[in-house]
Length: 259
Image (cartoon, rainbow, N blue to C red):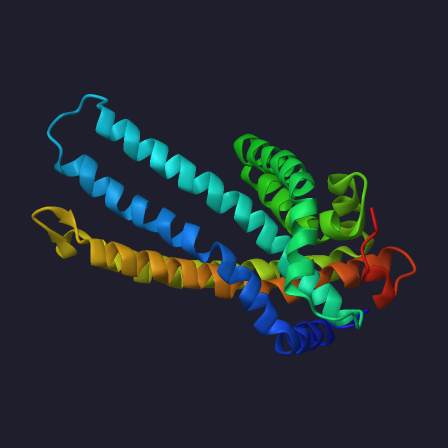
């Protein structure tokens, strides 16, 4: 456990320095679907804006189905790679041999559970935002370590997230707020760069240039991958700190159950 914020920060980036290469290898697996999704999304507005036919044509349906398919593939792969990236860190922290293949298999096994708990957590966040913004933001902060819980524990993931978060509210809120701030910073820079490439001033007579759409998609994918690599050690160490404040805990407990 890190008794101070500075200790948590130092441990997280020490772990990042030790494991960034295998984490990058895992994250690159979903790079192609992510780029494909970005290209389709960047080109889709141009297709609809340049068309004078407002009817729901077969072409529009094909574009929507393509976007939906790419989104589903990217989402499923993102779950696997997110869990596998954290598993790489667990391997490193517990002294196990670092295995990209083993981490991916673990991520694949836990992806269905992450999909289910993530869906429920998403519903809670949406309901909180609809009823009143602050409860939704609070739920989002609490659920930030849910992927680590799903990977390393079994049982009620949402209930466990609440217990760990409130074991030491001050320490937890400081860590998760920092993680959210880093994620927002990455997202803001990525949005500015990608949006500039597909602005109206960069449109040709035929809509968005494919080259610009591809470049914007690559930039978006790169920022998503880098953000995940940077944030994952922060998530794992934040989880470890929360758990140590809730119950007896050591690094050896990070090893996930065999079943």
